[in-house]
Length: 59
Image 1 (tube, rainbow, N blue to C red):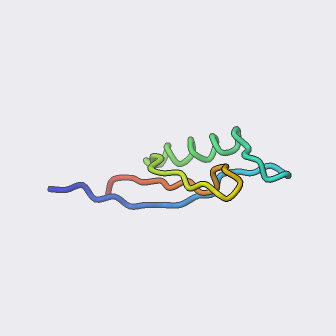
Image 2: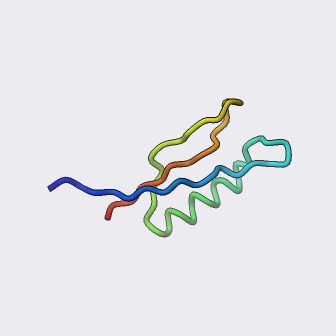
């Protein structure tokens, strides 16, 4: 039997000047992990920084 996953996309936290806010992004990922989500992929924007975090969890 193959595993089935559900996916969710969240935005990486940005600072006032559009750079990545590592602390807030880590908090978002930790909150998601408490609900069973894990990081699957990271989508990068034109400036080279992560903009979307793709999470997955087993159904």
